[in-house]
Length: 482
Image (cartoon, rainbow, N blue to C red; front, side, top):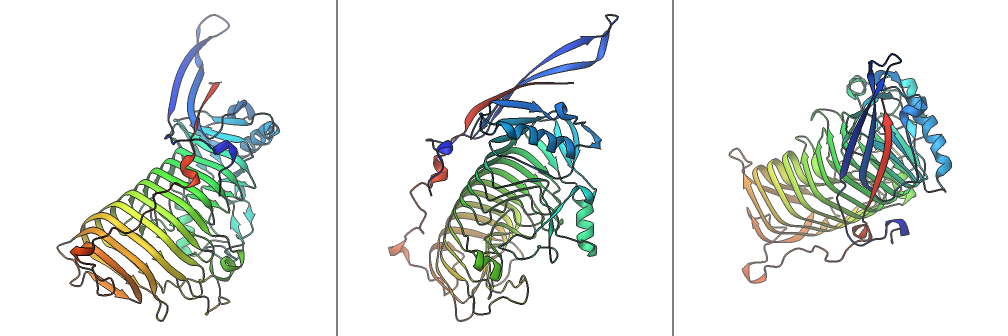
């Protein structure tokens, strides 16, 4: 799929920000120096598109005291700026401060920019979180039957939307939601921090995300998605705080992100059981680069378990996993249907792991009892190469589906250093088929080594995907605040 014209350029540049601050002292009527100071800020930042019109949240009654609700201010500001969509677009600047807010919706040809000292605080008042329908490819909420609380920053049917900043912060204040989840007190599925649906040309970059109620970043049913330079953290015991979950998306690039999570750092998805099969929208053409992950109870990169629309052509490289349950995990089950194929991972370093590789064909966790027991997932063309791991409890646990094995698995040039208290049998394999080459410790018999005469690296594509050609522009903003 070709990127749209606004994204079509030659090379890639990581988002950067330059800030120049000028302070003008206001004088009181008697000539004495006032305690209040106007701050005039000039920012340069990188984005897929620049904007002709700008405004500050403070212009619309926003108050950054950490107490006053700014939900209305955000929505009034964005509604006002939406009139410029066909006139060069607009950007909303969030100044320094602690901006308490419930959910708000974005618009097209729009940039939300957070100052480095700006913190969006997610409201603890459930009344500031409208309830919306379940995702059609899921059929129900992930936490409960029925609807779900809308995400903090939400957009649907958008074109050309940017959420960025000078590493400004979005704090989900998730502890309240985690407690309700554990106590079974949720009326609806917990909100995410950022969710963009049915959209094209999306950038999410240069932000710090803290303590999401559930998933952090969820692009779904979208194309041409660029995610760069995010720092995402939550307690490692927090429930379902996945970092980035591309879901039924085409042409996505995730790079230069640091994630500490209570769940998978990146989870690639495409719908759940019969609902995902019927919706039929795969995730494909996904690039993941320069990721650092810490997640003691989950995966660095997970494929599934909601993969019923299909997952294909995923390319991951230059990955660092530290104190994480598994490096790459494929999760599926009878009833999922769909496929996971043409997966390529290379240049991965793993330190202190339970498993380097994990494939699960009996994951379970169905949307309801109406799934088709004859909907069998196809797992094939899985390629892992050029990896080093240390202090690993078990090299791999690879479990396909009885009578329907996972096939085309290739592992080459991988050295796994086992922990002092490692399992006696480093590999367990059932219902899989493939090959290995230059792997230590020696894999199971279902992955026979090709021998020194036939050392061939596993595949990794040499061509570029359309998202690799995207370059960001240098944009700027002049504004003032007290």
